[in-house]
Image (cartoon, rainbow, N blue to C red; front, side, top):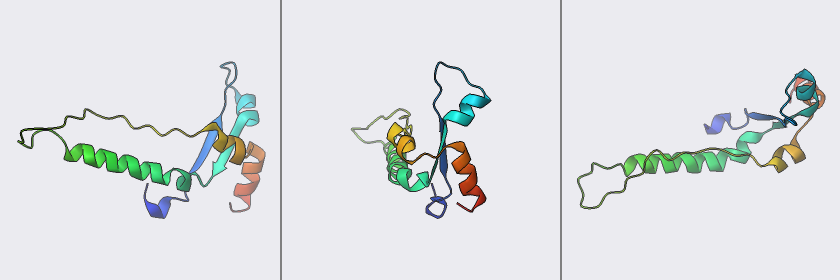
Length: 101
């Protein structure tokens, strides 16, 4: 995430109950969170540092001892409290966007 774009991200979560997805479920259950960028920025930066370190430690340096890190998986997880506390329903989201969120 580039620092100049940190305020250009939003989050939309649709909690799907009973595995059924249709327009009504999306309209009723969708929650939109503005300003998610600053909330995840530190974690994204840490993950980038981890990937850079992984690249730096790659085997093949010719030393007596090497570290082999094989494709570490990095996934971002957003806790439910984020969208439960800060999430807006669809209609409120639309109104906020209309008025220049």
